[in-house]
Length: 468
View 1: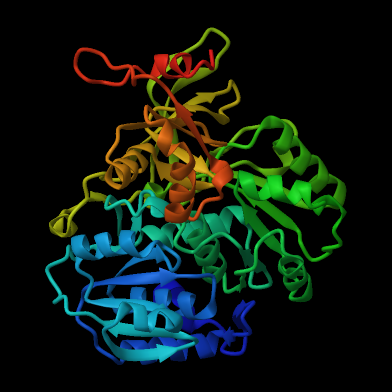
View 2: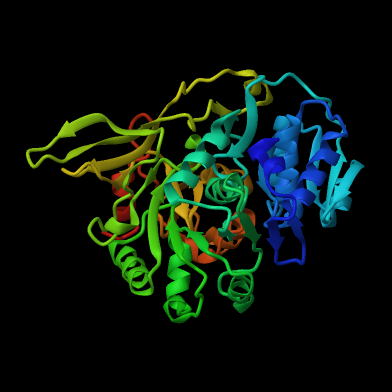
């Protein structure tokens, strides 16, 4: 059984959510076995995720039964979901009961407020090693997927559980979406250790979030940079959470100021602060900074997790013993490559255990790594990876105008020549991506600067908008 769920003591708590559901390992095993008994044909299943017991139990059952789930947010815009449906032709949906009427299809099985719906799409050939699919930019419904192979998720779960020192007594808090690679790893690594997981749908700013964690004695929390920005604003450092012993961070680069705040507060309260780094292409985590070094190595992502190797492609050695280059990784958690069509799901392993992240990094003289920039056209807004190219496509399709998107991990800047659209773009993107409208800024310019080949002159965009 996936993650050895059936080998744990049957009466040990496994999952509890803030909707009122809870499952022991024995009860979870029964759900997975009842799902297996359906003997479904190997096929693609759209798993519409929320942080709930039903969503999590379905994911574990799909993996155990040998089906291939594409993990999507249950709140993904219907039009974007429909585009993915037309591209990947899922034979089934695993979805909240509340979406049953909207999705249609024949109900095959249900439990824990979730239902398995059979669609009109027939199963089609899939690579025998293919185990799971994640979008490269979930909020924009990108058709580009990351193809996981059997063993990726398990290897990362085992190595992360090892480096964090998880035991069966841990109570992990899953506040990040489970269709997001870091949220999924929080789940996998805790269940691999025989620990329990709190699945929380409440918002970090909702007092109910923190009362739920306090009541059920959550011991570990993982957030993205935006999570910690919110926590600082709401006075997390003054909260009484005696059971909480580990804070972890991933999903983007913290400012040095924020990094120091978390590390110092953790040290004061006898907690561990563990900075990590990872990507969907590496099944979540590649690196880990020992918490004892958090205040010595401010801003570092640490070193490779067990069984993995970090290195710099195109490495340049500096006179002071540091090195610069593109952060790259080898390990058993490296996925198979990408897909952009159903036919691509027959492809074999293209990464072959090695992945170049597209992030520019520095290695210090002690061998610790730091992210210093990004080569690829992706941002991490509120910790969620968003494709600039996909966002431009969404805008051009909706408005029939030319747009150029740039930015950093705090804000996306959208350039357009049509002033009449200025007040329409942000509400549209916020609705489509489910990101707060503060993530976007629209700038109107006279003309989008391009070279003779039609390529955007990015260096001239801000000048055209009067920003430099």
